[in-house]
Image 1: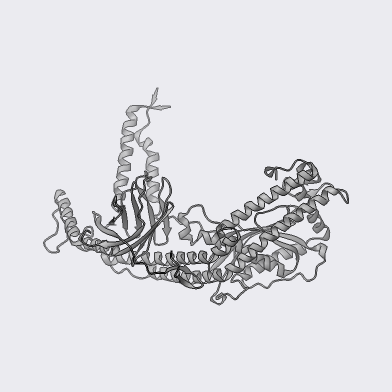
Image 2: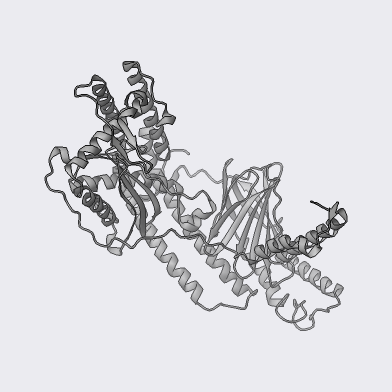
Length: 237
Length: 382
């Protein structure tokens, strides 16, 4: 049985439209799906220190986001409620409320507070130890992303060309994405953190730039054991 | 000729797929393994003094670790694969100790791989193992193919089970229950049945060496139950060779067995501490989740207070998990050197010993073939 080409076109168009619709609906509470050509890799290993001067200023980013949202509202012919509250750009209700917009920026600030990072990486996995926060970990699988589920959230990670992407999907419409990019000379590392809330129509993106540093040789190395706890020796690593 | 399909009809599969995707829950639940009722407090039954010819030799194969292929589920199920692989070797050794203590058995050996020619072969799979609960699927069958038991055993720990005294185990009741069930079955067998098991075991081993020479002595029915068709003549030199080769194999297993015991003794103190910490962690986490789900939200959805609460809950869970992971690393740091003295890493031990065992059996077959001039049985035919 053959289907007439004239019939296929509208069917295909409708299918594509549905898929696009689905993608759009998802993009409101989740970042875009990752491409699957995750072959090229970069080496992030080492010790990294936050460079405030080169990192995004949260106030500047917040102002830019509010301007964008206002433009969006203006284009739609829905003037923002900007007379009273500084950041209210929605037309009432809960979406794009000032509290939600500022909350998103505050969340981005909270999530990106780590000043020091230690990254260990080999061909199979990576561990990004962040000062004051949980470590981001990822196992590498050729052509697919690594998923970890916990009772309180889900993580997906993997390569997007030379970038490493960590995505954390949390309850209540909150999701976080960290994209790690290392400079060609491997002296600078950028983490682009995107925070998405289903209560704000635009995600909040904050770039943090880290610079490589060498920790001082403490003259000892330690490892974790159960019966003796942290065991240190003066032997070099 | 073209058949026109209405657009709405053609869209059905796509629509169904989209609806299915939308309907799927964000976090699909893993199907929990069917659990048996905990064994409770169990007293080990002992067999008393049994005559030598009433004792069956027991082979306890290293357990299946029961690690799901889907790596994404490990974290959710609280499985640390490296520790689980070590447990698969640890658990049979303790079960062997309990079986020996019950006194109703001949030689009880821990085997790197299952060997159906053992008079009684016990295999197992770890369904769950952490500081709170141990769930084992245990199967025991004798050489004739008679199934003694195929059962799931569960035991739970109480606060009083920790810290674990030297030589003890927080799940000792479970092991005692397995030993009691096996002994009960064994005591229900007649002397002639025991004799038949021993004879079939020997002939199955002989057939394993040379199907051509010994395959005709046995017959298996559709259910896989073996029976003897006839026996070799008394003083048959071929059977003497078979018995000698078998004792060579036992010698190898006894050497391997000592390695398992060493591993067990080295591993036990650390492993018990790990289980104790695991229990404390699990109870804390359960308590935290219960409090997190029951308490009121700090703020309206989308506000910083609400998002911070969501993120903080996740962060705390991850930190707890990663602490446990660090402990697993600590566990490996202590276990690895012991295993390395034997055959590299503890997690390679199973593979290495299994392959060594397989290779040894293959060598024995070749020796037997050389001695007798009979064609060796191919491993695929076993």
